[in-house]
Length: 171
Image 1 (cartoon, rainbow, N blue to C red):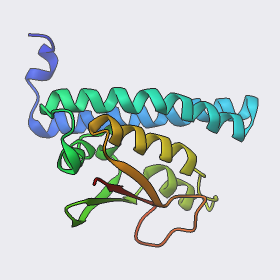
Image 2 (tube, rainbow, N blue to C red; image 1 turned 135 degrees about the vertical axis):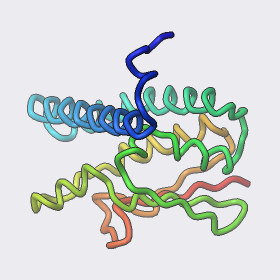
Image 3 (cartoon, rainbow, N blue to C red; image 1 turned 60 degrees about the vertical axis):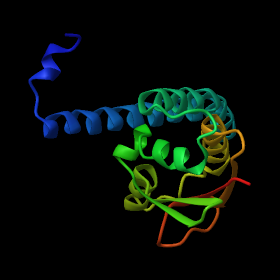
């Protein structure tokens, strides 16, 4: 029995813990970024964030694949399953569309970071360069044949339908 304190909890309590841990992870990520930005500026903070996401997103994808038993080259079906088990899926509202068998579109309907900035009347955080690395590395880890394209992500102008959107294709 590895975690006896968890074994006694209800499903709802366990889900609450998962959500809290996702929020804590995001809070740490944001605080780390803000500290780097204060000391070195926004450009350097984004550069270092990209470097961290290159490694983290691959680690996350591999752990999800192992947990779900997804084989390498599991295509867009594998990517769809994996996207639903990412850490921030627990705190962000996302929508996945499959317009055809070669395409998957992920829309981040509500991003916790961008929603907080909206509430504070701040400009959206320009996460596009980080997102390009994050999503392309995640998808390539699931299946190296998957190509990733940004539909829109801040600093791009976005619609009221989503905070960012990504298109994944496989030939």
